[in-house]
Image (cartoon, rainbow, N blue to C red):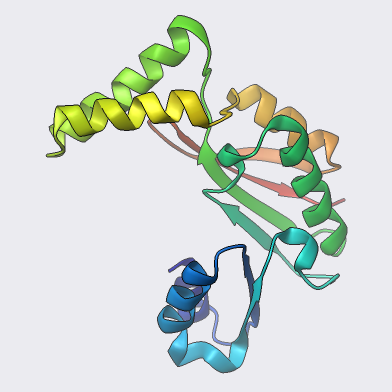
Length: 171
């Protein structure tokens, strides 16, 4: 969906999408069909992406699935594929995830889902799975990883409940 939106907004741009799931790529092919001549889809992880240099990159709703070391490696691989000055946009779950603070963040998310019409049992189960399976980092840790990967000018541009989005640049 993001590639489709980008392609609609920028008719002169070409795009490369990378995903490890063949099923997700099949859905992506359908979504970008009107723009197929400008979109290349690649199965795999960032290491499977062409070396670039690319003018920009996004990493959306992905990094919260990766432990800290893999997250840093992914950010490094993105960094190496960008031309100097190119922006990177990332967005994912980011909140203080441990202890009482983490429980409070997950409770807020569950309450929001229930207020939006989700069943309480489903929302609570989702939050329990999130606590067990997602290696969520606090926002300051995410910023530090972006900087450790070499990015500069890291700026928060989006925040909604447990989601954060940053833009950073390759120097």
